Structures are given as C-alpha cells and as structure tokens.
Image 1 (tube, rainbow, N blue to C red):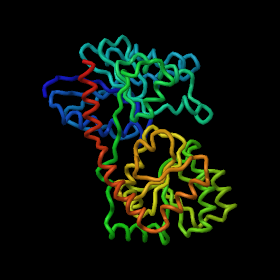
Image 2: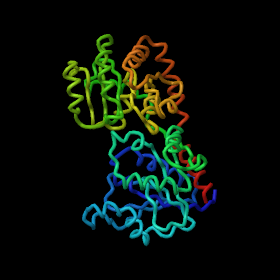
Image 3: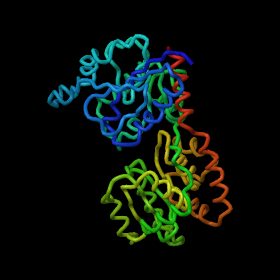
Image 4: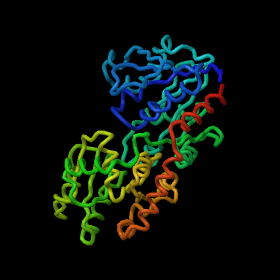
Length: 380
C-alpha cells in the first residue's frame, strides 16, 4: 500500500479518561493502522496533562499544544466560548488540514480546517437518557455540530448507528459501523490460575459475575434485587469487579436488608490477568444494562469460556448473537428464569460456552482498524 494518508487525532479523550472507554478504541486501532500502511502517519495532539499512556508506534507522532484551559480562569463566558476559542487559538499548531484527515475522539473540530473530518461516536446515551446524564448545552451543541459537519461518522455498532440517525439530521450513507473487540489477553485461564485466584480472593462458592461501573443506566440495582430472590434457590455468590470503590447508599440498603453481606463481594483494583481469571472462574456473566454502545465485557466473557446472560436491549444482542441468554432489563422474572436456565445442568452451559468462544473470534481490533482505514481511503 502507498496511499500516503496523514491523520491528525485530537487527544482529548486521553485527558478525560484514565482507562478504557473511547480511549481504548484509539489505543488499539492507531498502531494497527500504522502497521497496515507504512506510508500512513498519525499526529496525536494533546493539550495539558494526559491521564493515561498514549499509544506508541514509530509512525505515531505525539505533539503538545498550548493548554488554553489552564491559562484562563473558568467563567460562564469562557465555558460558553471555550470550544471555538480553543479551535481558533490552536490553529498554528493544528494547521489548515489540506490533504489531511482530522479524526475526533471527543467531538472537536479545528478552526477553518480544509481537510476531511471523521468523528467516532461510541453511543447516544446523553440524548437517550437525559434524566441520568446532565450534559451541558454547550457539549450537546458541539457534539451535534461535529457529527452533522463531519465527512464520515463512525458508529461502534449498528444499534448506535440507528440512534445517531434518529437524533441527528444526517444521511445513512454518512455513518459507517466499525465493531470493537476484546484484547487478545482474554481467553480461558489455566486451572492453576483459577485455583490461585480463588484462594487469593476467597472464592469458596460458585458465582455469577458482574464487571464495570454501576451507574443508574447499568441497571445494577435490578440485578442485586433479583439476585436476592434467586439466592434463595441457588447457593451462588455475586462477584463484582470494577466501578466505584465502595457500594452506593442504595446498594448498601439492599445488601443489608437482604442480608447479603457475605454473598455479594466487590473487588476494584484488579489486574487484567486477574480479570481474565475471574471471567474464567465464573459460572455465568450477567450484563443487565439498559443501554450500551457496544459492550466489550461481553466479548471478554465469551472469549474466556463464560456463558453470557444479557439484557435484550441496544447493542447487546448484536454483539452476543445466539451465544447467550436474554431477558428484559425491567423484568426480575425473566432474569430469574435465565439464571435458573444457565445454572441448571451442564448441557446448555457447554453449548453457550462453545458458541461464545466462536462468536468472540469474529471481532478483532485488526478488523476494526481495517474498516477505519477503508473509511479514510473513501474520504480522501
């Protein structure tokens, strides 16, 4: 290949997120893109302190630009004009964009950019659940402007694409889907690693597993309340990894009222290798979310030979396919039924494990990068 593609990526997301999320997408695909095409070069712009390591490759060039936010005192006026002001002030560092692609990680648009514009949209959660997320009017305007003016919009699932088309006035042809993937690290752990993990964390009973934040839209409280009912007929623990480092007041109320202190356990500081082993030890992975843009933990679980029980909403069925069991996220009865189903004997469980491992192999970061590369080629 000799396309001589030059891409500028705003590093905003690396200043916002300390790990995972949107930043993980770019950390995975940018080196892959450079490996695909020796003539492709990426300039990664950052302004101010980053909260995590930036992706490294001989064709990824890190460039720091003036941290405007730290030089000016916060004010209502500044908050309102900041995005456009920064775009104008940063122009000497960013350039005019002629012959280049600007790929936005978090709804930025350089001032008077003459090149192509690409934006990745991970979800439409602010628009779909305004009661849970109080995004500023300025942010929502900036997002809309960036999406509507972009040459190409990348959605991370068909579900997210449908949501974008519902809320924004853009043509369907403008939106392309690039599915995500799990890291190659995630595969079933050895029996030795499983035994060590059980001993280290005191995992003495079979357990169902939950991973990630427990924000309202994640529907964790519904899982917790259902688990209390299910616990009466199945002697399983509920193990949670990640998210807030302590239980919320609402979670504590449920745990105490249901006397679940010894059955529900939370572990926060877990290495990726340990997370893989948690998945591998779990009897089932439960994902009760009301909404997901994609859902990488679903792929991680399947890759680790763990059956998936997920809500039948948004992107979850798109990712899991026929390799999991589903329930309405509002229905305790349906969740109870599928938990019974997946823990009642081994035949179904083994079938789900086999299908899940095969399903997870269909999603790779190399494929994500290849689809992104194709988008770059189309707009130049």
